[in-house]
Image (cartoon, rainbow, N blue to C red; front, side):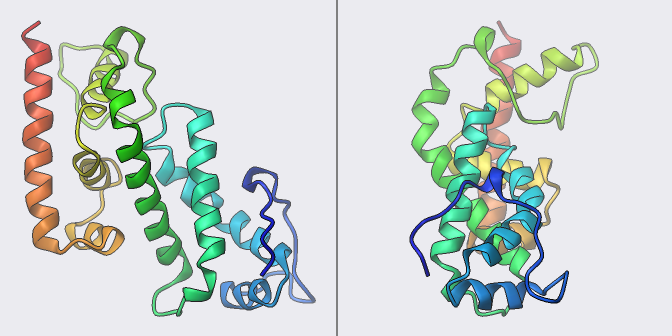
Length: 201
């Protein structure tokens, strides 16, 4: 497999071989045989899903591009490890979640230093008070999420924003279901304290 890797957002819409819609498995085999255009097609197919996951954690388009690029690079580099025991979409989604987790750990200090007045959120609202405007509630929520630990924000995002089941979160993160439940409880408690602290201001 070649080492060069093109930018994901520039991947063209293309067909491979005589079949206009080759299977993911066929594209993987072709990529491993040295055809990077096959991986470009794989990336194009799953770009929407991956960008959707990453957008929950990125604060702006620049971060979103960086996270997604990292996800596809990791998928490309580890493609030979794909065993087909689960659909390719599930496999690359696990890579995406772990990349987002790594991103949150690396940027936590930066996120903690952002003030509410300057916060530019990118996460959709999943809870709001009746007496708070949607825009203000979204900013407050994003401000609170930014102060959670990486694992707290990850589990809250997957369970509440992505509406994944405990079992699905366990599969995506590699945590046991009991660990997901414990971390979810701690994350909700931490988020509640942050929101209550803000309400007291």
